[in-house]
Length: 414
Image (tube, rainbow, N blue to C red; front, side):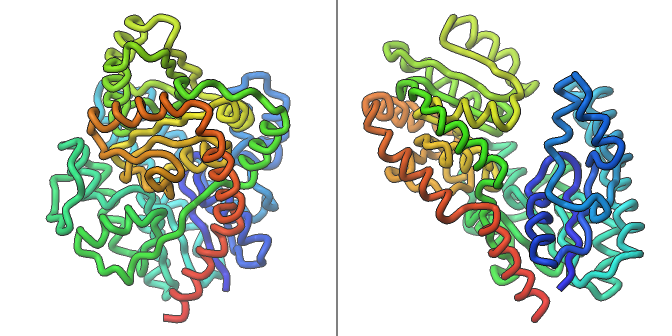
């Protein structure tokens, strides 16, 4: 069995998967964007600018010759962000479409000179490359890491709704339409949670065409978490909350701020490890000024800093309206946090065992869950330790690869 893995741009779980496949002698190539290798990687190691140097975190335990890049697409993505940002979202999406097309065309050129049995591609980045692989008689596996496009559209327009058992077609924006188009050349779909699979089935896709493999935590983060645990940092009180990721509407930022403002008599604080999304900036500024000393924005922090930060907290909060299976939730569990999230985060969190689950978009339920968490205080530590053990026992990078390889075998034997 020989597999080509197409990771798309930025850090994504398919690159660590490719490293696992290489260790098993199954990788034909990793196709990816913006991957520093050779002289570029050596130069970056001497660059002082941390924002540039963090590109090195994209490297995996792979021979450089096994990695085939699509760098022009990354330039186009950044150009769309810089030129249009949140001010002209449709124009930004159109530039991103050009970037997806550029990536797919370059990936197709790479595929023509490779020997492989299966093409595992990230949704939106397939395009002509997935079509070419299928026409050549290779099996194609589309990796989709959020709800079905119809579900994403529904939640984007009507936050707080649950996904119905039968989900009719919905009006799609440009990105959602791209997701849907990339399904057409897939023999099979790989998703990262039972929640995502349920949205596919609701949208009319046969359950047997969709396999689930939870990502869990990659080896590099686990190593960082173990280093952080060795420091034996004192855990902050349960009333000190940590959020990680893009603080915006889809991640439940508005519900979280509203819930905390209903609890003025509790000594809560909120730390955000990430950036505030454009649609939440004004609300965030009002919130921060209304609660001086209680709110902290760390911005982007690297893997080691995130692991140290998570190791210092008891309570991780992530009230997302729509995910696939949020990696930050697994990272928080691995770090010994108790997690407050929603069923739409696609996590393994069970209500009352690993933390609390509240309906997405429901401020009342989130407020009640926060108040209960604040009362429990240090009693959360035992649950946190169990969470850390669970991730290490069942949701490591190599175990994710085991689950994916089983999907490959099933697909190639069909």
